[in-house]
Image (cartoon, rainbow, N blue to C red):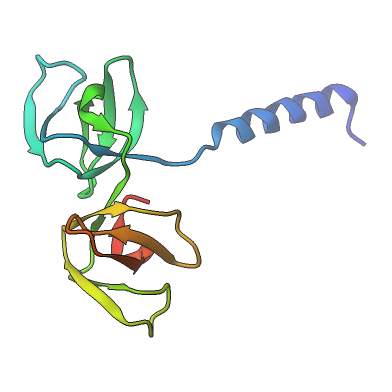
Length: 148
């Protein structure tokens, strides 16, 4: 039988563990931006990331955000360089974007690797609705894109 103090300690520990879990946050780059190795414009400039590229938010500071790019690199970007708009990037060699969320649905268009698509609706049943910059839209398998 557990003592009341042991129960209290376990409850506190479990409550803390539950609070630590959170959803992964993705954003997109508003305009081409410089990525740095430290949260400072005096840091080493690593490379320029293209507009629209999705990034995973890892750490948020006042004016800087540590992000993971589609290639997995961890870098720092100025917060003002990020947009609220969500995008995904094609990771498959070619991704078929279909009229409906089904493997046998007609193909609207195919997107090559590294093409950025607008994230149009929440994923469901292994598919996500996307929109090409040219205006065509449809559904792509979540396993063929990154940024969700």
